[in-house]
Length: 114
Image (cartoon, rainbow, N blue to C red):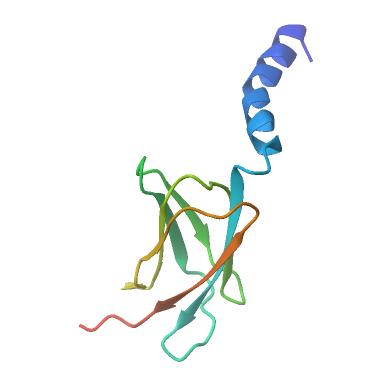
């Protein structure tokens, strides 16, 4: 690798490494998407919106309905919901995390009424 490329790579990654080392700042969210009968829903699009910045991250629920987000700033509030085949779950609002806390949520998607 050329020296200038190595420097560029390190300067890009350095801020992320410093932030990730601060155990008080970053929290996790685990969850599960289920249908109205409580059955796991795989393949749902799960959205996580940081309320202050309106930044949206997404994940796809796995075979057992599970999903995971990490690197959440405990100082911010978040909104999380799931979409599956035209059905949307209720939105859950997550406010400030406690240090070291991992939040767990269940999102229920109901068939759309057309």
